Image (tube, rainbow, N blue to C red):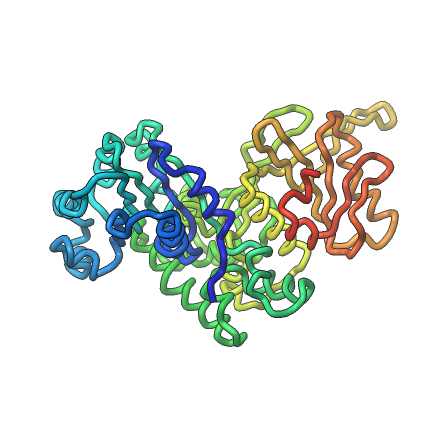
Length: 430
């Protein structure tokens, strides 16, 4: 069964022949290779591109490496990447005719000096280059400097709810419950049995994501980063910082870990795309607050597998789903803070109100509250109170799991249910 990824395919199609290196990034097993080597490849063939003008090469494939005289096991033993001269020689042997050639490279960070190799193709008018990478270091500042502004990133997420529902056999209500529990990693979604899904998630976390972080960052104390993952998994959507996490380690684990080490580990988790961070933003003061921050998981199935599916709070889980959907749609997402000074009995008292998400895309901004349920008027007043303290004209939105019709209230605040939000790409823009 094929899961369509039209959102990302359209991004690749719109970037064809733009003179830049198209870089697909994202967490492992989110579908990057399938997008590039199957879906996009099929598009090129159907567009009339001759098969001989499409060069596909995966640097984690023993068969592909054999074609350039490299051995995957040998590279692993010697702790090195593929020889760039061997690869360049292979490509030269493949580019023998006239017209445009399409170079589709998978896991290109496993090629030594890949920045230099890719930049060399930018000088060729007959080469259109597309590559995948599985860690944020692939697009570090140093790499961007090497590309000299010639890299064009397409960041890919696991299946969003709309993509998930395209292959789910039940209704949207059952679907959302399953999606929030087992996530959107394609190979997990396509498994029929619950036990198969659970085993797949546990195996992926243990043998792919964790081991990848260990190897890449040469971590000696593996228990500490696993403990950090457990803490973050148990507190998604909660404000925290390295100092607070350090104190948790010392209280619960009797650990002497430092806040600098915690920060380093947090960077590793972000680097692997397992988690993303949302900064706090002072809406009235128009300034960022350095700490604390919120951490969200790129895939909820992985998060739930990490804590053995023992802790399932729908309020925070829904918040994580909304965050991921907004990020997939291209918004930068911060946690909003509204500070109000009130005079009480001659004393100035400062109060802070939180807006779950401040979303920006170009000149567009939305303020969004995630409210699992709004059972009465008091709860509604509580949800809209931060909005009433914001004195600008940007759209304000409440997303709830309650099955209420989309409408605007007397203050012009948009109320919509999460199903409409997730299944209609323009739900908050109309």
